[in-house]
Image (tube, rainbow, N blue to C red; front, side):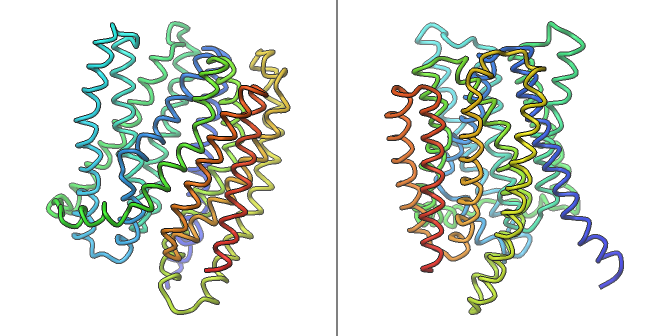
Length: 414
């Protein structure tokens, strides 16, 4: 291996971490900007939309992402391109059918959601959905750098533009302008993907593998259950909060969740997920000791990052609270510590989720996810009316801790 290759291998993790830090910092600053200049209610609406960008792919993806990822690892390039195109055609068709039904419902109800806002949100949800799926599929192909660059475009590039725009022009401090910035970042992603597809004539390999994806839908039932229940357990709390306590307290919870989620994003997507192809490959070999050694190495690295990032998130919040000028945040500061602890447990639990995927424990993945979702629903519905916003935080903590304990136990028995 040449000196250049060694330098590239050493530089890639640093670049990936820098991109993920930039993404996380941008979303973090956007949450602060929204809370300070738009309001906690607007932050609550934004938080609900972010939740929808996870819930909708879980519903419309039919669980096929993990199944396709596992096949992409060893596919020839042309076959992989056709497989990815087929996989992305599935949610595209469902959006084309489903979104007009939502527009019709809004029209029949007299337009409770303003049409410009509804159209922008619909475009964001569609483009974010297929961009998110593309990111996962590129990771499955080992195209970690390209996946992270595209993720930066849709997560880290546009928030600073929106923030600067709003700081310069007070009339731009609206939810609509924020969403237009998000939409612009997604359009840039798809322009870049189109350019990549046309380079080296990759577009020639685009095709539809309909029997293949049909077999994938049937085989992906456990993953579908996992996706649905996982998304519900993660984002249900803010929807229940908005129902019982209104948008302002939803905004408080969203801000604390956004600060704590820095820990999850950097640990799971910069430390653990890039090693998923290696885990899958190792899991397919007849060498359990080598697999456990790789797993242990990843766990140690992830655990170190969790401690460092939890400390950093705590310091950052206390530095920035005076800037926000929102007394309501001080009134509920204890909620942050619960959310931070829950997020650390969730990051660790997701790490063991990747281990289960690599070990082909599909049924266990589904069963655990269902149990987690049921527990989350039960905790949220019981605790939020009783304890308010503290109930949502406690439900998050209990669900994350339970998922970690069960996933760890199942991986030990694999």
